[in-house]
Image (cartoon, rainbow, N blue to C red; front, side, top):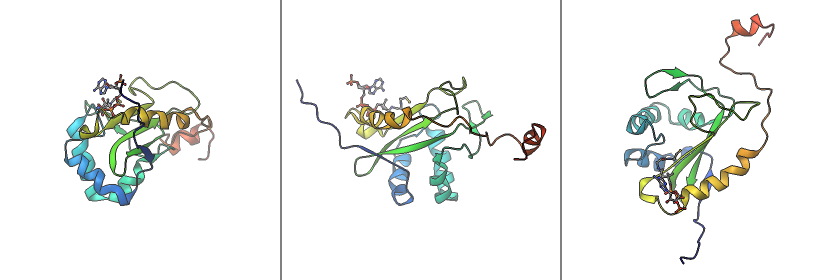
Length: 165
Ligand SMILES: CC(C)(COP(=O)(O)OP(=O)(O)OC[C@H]1O[C@@H](n2cnc3c(N)ncnc32)[C@H](O)[C@@H]1OP(=O)(O)O)[C@@H](O)C(=O)NCCC(=O)NCCS
């Protein structure tokens, strides 16, 4: 039997300084979105070219302040709170994300799961995804405050509920 060797993988918060490795992966046939594939990669390359710091900041969004999410059919849906961690073995080798609905373990039907991950094709089969998931799970299990005010309610809606916003 092959001895089990834990892969030298850690999770990092996305950093501007490491963005060139991320861009190289996007250009080399890796997509952060296993459903939208190349379309999502090209979209991210455009966003990075326009505003690299803004792009990096958008990957950490526990208060769902970001833009709505584009669905494969082109429709737009509200963003859930969440964040992305980069899978790191000395360089960028994939991403793993966590998203949630405040105050409940359930998700809207259009969200496929709390955790999504994808490893660059040239580093697959080495246990990276397994290790990344093991590293994220303690954070994922941590309780999250239920008292979260969804940012996508308009000021008009908040005022209608007696909330001055
Ligand atoms: C699925 C994926 C993340 C696996 O990454 P990885 O680092 O190669 O995975 P690991 O080496 O940790 O392997 C984990 C297990 O999944 C299995 N596996 C790997 N790729 C797989 C795939 N495409 N389909 C099904 N099982 C797969 C491995 O055989 C391994 O099983 P084992 O422990 O019994 O040997 C990677 O193939 C990928 O990024 N695919 C595209 C995106 C995707 O499908 N993401 C998952 C859903 S969010």
